[in-house]
Length: 293
Image 1 (spheres, rainbow, N blue to C red):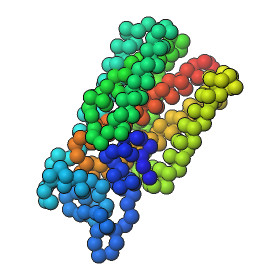
Image 2 (image 1 turned 90 degrees about the horizontal axis):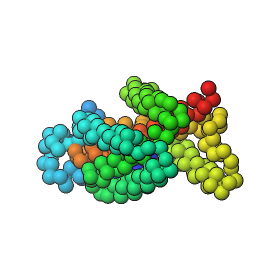
Image 3 (image 1 turned 45 degrees about the horizontal axis):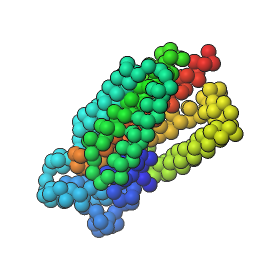
Image 4 (image 1 turned 45 degrees about the vertical axis):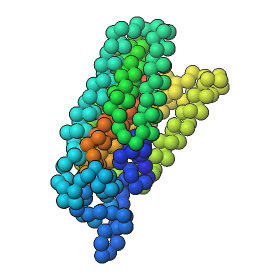
């Protein structure tokens, strides 16, 4: 089962077509076929568990008895790259908010920025190596998009962006808390069920968008500003939280299995995309609740 996030499933955290932590038990008498014990096994874990980074570690020239931390991704690397990527999003959003007044022109710039960000994200997702320039470029254009739409929401629902930021932080913090506490176990079955729900949601939303565009469904259809829209928004945020649990699991496994340091950029990229998803949905949800006051 691959990650919900294209950057994780394409490169880095799913090299054996599955989660690093979801491997079958090794056969009696030695490690599983295609696995390697030793310095690439997770710290404190089964030294014979399958390691998707074992071959790559050899490609990076790591000797058989090299320390686990040599040239390997750490949590500090992930935090630093994530801060850089999210900081770029924030700077782009602030500049767009300050320099682009609410108008049809700025709305067009927001759509254009979103399309550029999407293209950059897809290019990075299909690259075999992390490109900081592409990732930071994605973050910058995504920031412009978020800045414009946040200003538009704020002009109609004063304070909505600030509430959405607080809501996004609360969702991310709560998700990390329940994940680290072990209240959510990210298993293959959990991932399959969650991905099925997420894919179904995206398909339904795409159909809804087409129906609204052709005038079949009025008032936004499932994305209306009423109770139905609120329910759909809450479901979208829950799906975003599900994405975060997959991201946390695969970052944790990448560090444990000795992923190369460059993978920290992909971790930051994936987390940024997930948090942007949650923020946009939270912004809509705040607007819906504010409209019904």
